[in-house]
Image (tube, rainbow, N blue to C red; front, side, top):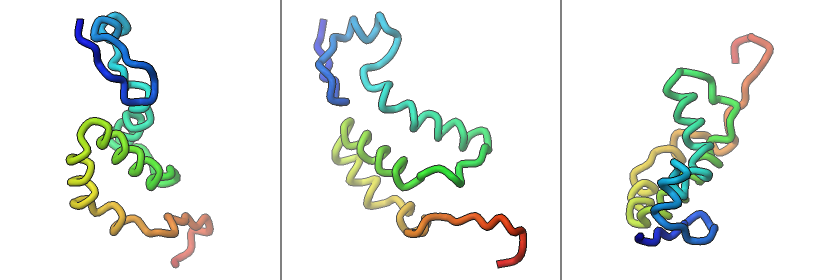
Amino acid sequence: MARITKRCGGPPCTASAAIRTGRDCGSGPLAPIRTLRNRIAHHEPIIAWNLPRHYAKIIELTGWLCPSAAEWCEAHSRFREAYPPEGIVLRGDGGPE
């Protein structure tokens, strides 16, 4: 059985171990990204989430799989331009701002 290097910091696993568990070795670190994707897909609010942290994690995980793809994503993504550096502040007074 071929060895698969686990890139999430844990020990290497074998392909048969991944098949037995029904999960890929990297599924743990992907859980928050999957949750974010599902929230977006179901039109649920994500405005209060720490989106810069999620973006950084997505780029990091992409780099684990393919460093050149992560570089491409960073070069072509508009997230840092579109998301304000101070974050998004919600005002609860309901008045015009």
